[in-house]
Image (cartoon, rainbow, N blue to C red; front, side, top):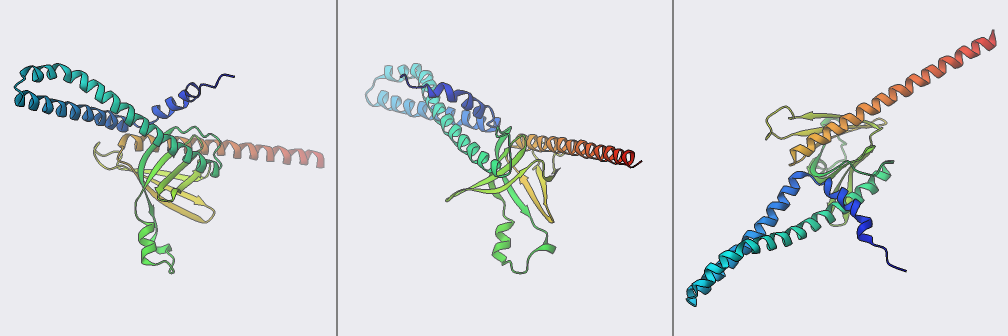
Length: 259
């Protein structure tokens, strides 16, 4: 029995993962690969110049000038394959971890629409702090945390990386009472942009501040979240209208039976 071609089976998943890597990260990868190619050319050129001067072989110097373009292409292509594989593996692991946390948040659609890195900061009201909290606890709770941000069609997950593994920092269904607002989006392109999150569960309200060095991704995240919340509110309104209509028809039918 012939073995299955795992590469062909995983290629759609890898293509989807690569497509959802932020463009800013891809530009950094290209720059890293090209810098490796330039470094290789500089080393090769320096060695050729030293050989040409030391052994009085000028043809070695001029011959190297013809070889440099090919050396740049080969070196940068090899470096590109290495850095691309590294970032794909990194995003694959982040995607798998986010799917696990999304399942815990009752997420059904586990195909993420957005994956990027950012910083999450918890906003704690001074009036509701517990007296039993120590100063160190308060300090740690309000410190920005580097997180992976993953937005699914029906859930929102953020987790951090620790020496003991991934730790869930924020995970909720988009059908929960989640409110989103933004700051700095109307300012200049270089200004810091912030997404403010407010999650209500029972009588507990949690407030969070989300930022990212990738300004385009944070803008897209805010718009997608707001769109999902608007869709949720619309569905809830339809459900309430249907329930009121059903209750009215039931009351009417009871009145007719009573008459």
